[in-house]
Image 1: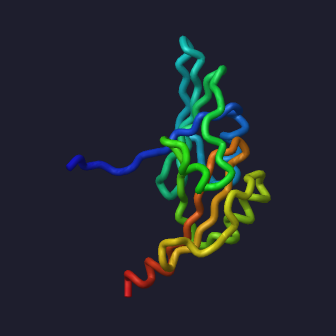
Image 2: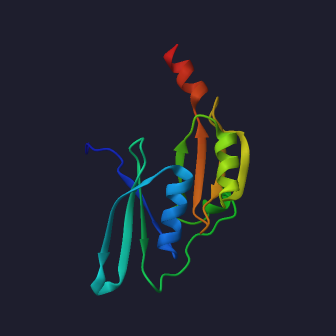
Length: 144
């Protein structure tokens, strides 16, 4: 078995400065470092959240649109990247805040198929799916 822990998710974006601002403003992330491969016109920024997770945003002119699913079930029809998920203390207020900040609804808050979990899906301003999960009840049950 290979040992390790998840480090980050990478998203290709068309508007690197705009998406950097959006993720910093809406999720409370900070720029960890910026980078460029000038010989291929490739630029990126690594964002870090205070909870320790990272999101890498990358931009290269000429990139074409990939998955733009209208909901998570449709996303499952495409192999490869589908979404990333955040474990939040309460789904509904986070969902509402992201919608108010320019995210779009992909699945309103509701019970998850996983017992005791509440979930929702939004898409960032460029269509990348973000799953919101509240596993508070599960953690409380496991701690008892």
